[in-house]
Image: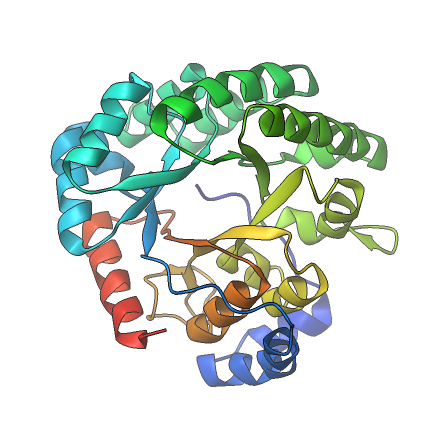
Length: 320
């Protein structure tokens, strides 16, 4: 879901205000060429996926019917929010009924999903959801939450357990960040023992700095590449004024999934293909760096099924 707006570095911000897709693509060109020259062969084309947070309201109205519609659009992969407060075996059975598979989840304890559910029904506010995040995600809860997620991930047939967010309080100082980095390594070791993979998902705040160091770089460098992978969000990285291709180049083989999201000229969310981001170049660079799963996401929409239908149509037309 959406998080408070962050301020980009002035030089990047000034370039982005009037940036269209072609202009942004030129800025990424050099990085994309660098990734293309990697010795590792590109991954074959993967079926498009969708992060099911995008269709949370339809899921809450009619779980079975919403998944039927997602599959009818053409999506083959889905990323879950835990097990949606439901029995994971039953959720998996519904996926299989419609030909869907779920490689990954954003872990979410029942208390947090209850807040999401209330938000979808307009029974709580965004601030209420943020409060639920703060209560659920603390240094003390990391390992218990990952242990719970391992159980649900296995039942869902998933490979990746993804830590979905670092909050402002987690990034208040370097010591708190280092605590989470150490815990992520522990979580990665636990997941590997269980035959799964632990990963981290970024927003825009991870592109701020502690001194000369970008927070996401500190997380990448501080975590063991054998234990911790990453899911890059195109929108949040770009909103922060960052070149996503540079991360795919610099940290090849660390990223395993991406959130495919577009951005309007005013930097709000857009359906994929309706915004200014060079989606084809980003996907191509991501594939060459080892990304295996691409999930369409739209954080806020009055008609989420229409948005993911439009996004799917655009991705199909790319033929990449």
